[in-house]
Amino acid sequence: MTDNEEPMIARGTMSELAFNKYKRCQWWFLVALSIGFLIIGQSAAVILGRFYYDQGGNSKWMATLVQTVAFPLLFIPLCTIRSPEEASTSVAPSIKFIVLIYFVLGVLIAADNMMYSTGLLYLSASTYSLICASQLAFNAVFSYFINAQKFTALIINSTVILTFSASLLAINEDSHEPSGLSKGKYLIGFLCTLGASAGYSLLLSLMQLTFEKVLKKETFSVVLEMQIYTSLVATSAAVIGLFASGEWRTMHGEMEGFGKGQVAYVMTLVWTAIAWQVCSVGVVGLIFLVSSLYSNVISTVSLAVTPIAAVIVFHDKMNGVKIISMLLALWGFASYIYQNYLDDAKARRAQAVPKPQNDSAC
Image (cartoon, rainbow, N blue to C red; front, side, top):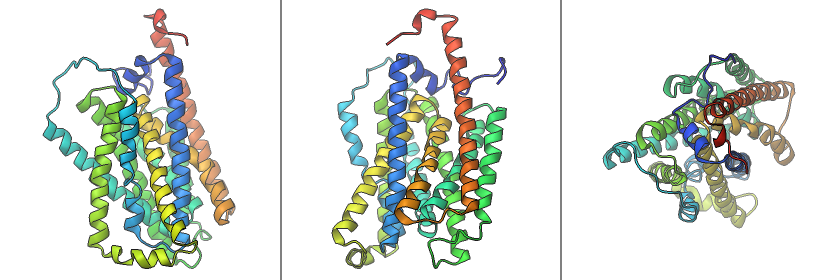
């Protein structure tokens, strides 16, 4: 990165506002907490989702529903974590416009969750997680056009590497898992997961754009409110899909035929729902504190966790192609992390020059 290039944490963006709001140690603590929520929540949710299918679950709409249905849990941090009131510097958007934005985002989330559920049905947990790494490449493109993020050599390098990583899995003849699935269903799972990754990246960029251009607030409560209202819309859409598709009629038989028993069936769905909400808090928190691009970068850390956990829990096959794909994905992830390190260092230097007294110590 040259000296005349702007950092990814660009001046005037939501990320810089959050960065300036907190002391450095407070900011890094919140970032670390959000990272922990994201990695733990996403890894647990994927493993439990695959467990649901392996033990006899077959409802894609139920798998879609549990990704957002636990959103009322977010009222706990919303009511307990108070954000300071700030004077508004612009005209507040109309309620109708905000409702429209939340509705559109909620519908997109429901559609994206459905594609993820279909992908996980036809793919092993390790293959699914590795394909999800392609969301970084999509996010780089969407962030460039929507959020005015700058392309650097490291970002381009990472995007190309992650594209190769996903391409390897697309042509991997030994990845037709779970066992017994045809090549056609594997292809459907691959395309759905790839499409869901693109949709997820688009959603993150649109959410960051909403924070910056529409809501124009930097309180954590605003971040949680967006997650709650969009999840309400997505949950409603999933419930409609569950009943419209007729899958609700199979729920009782699915519970009775679940491999580990009826209690395990209920607990699997409950903890999957909780895990997704833990993940969501981390995702939106990182969008608020840093950027949608960085949020997507951190979500790929689960690539180092989920495939390994899948091998231990489900005895997934880690053949040579998968190992190379994972190494490429980690290489791409490392490129993004190093780029963020350079951007953070430049942001600190830019802040220290005009106002050295603002670099508060803990």
